Length: 115
Length: 112
Image 1: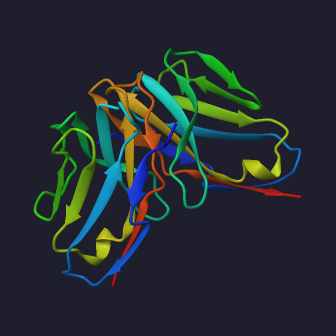
Image 2: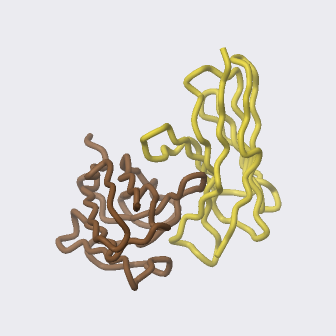
């Protein structure tokens, strides 16, 4: 079974530029998550989708971050404009459903460096 | 938001030794999870705990859900080189049933 795919794996941009990340979840998984992992910290949830609807975006900095999952499968996360503090690994995860009994499977992440 | 305090921050051990790490919170959690993250990869679930007092094993790994519901422990017995990585505790609290909160991780190094 194929895992969660993410691209690109690495991205270097200058502050105030825009960037987008792509995620393809495990086939059949209805729930998709985007996490931000700053160096030396654990992942922090940014947004959770159930099919193509947003379940939780309480920790998403909505003035600069946006995400969509239009057809309930792939998802994109965008940052516009980027700040230095956005340098982090952005992890996508998916699960059959939401909640504690559904294991989240993580992709390898996209490492973003903002100069 | 919820915070999980994980200790120690890093550990250096000899191959064959046992390892213990723990995770504490000021508030209760309904579920405790332990993940391992290798460099350049996403976290992988090792053990899930759903009931206070529960003790669960996965090979050489054993984890416990603290009786107060505010802590959890992970033990690794007879460590081997491939145990190297960052171990994260994570949990779901009653007030955030959909939001998984992660600790800051324990970096484990196994010396030959």
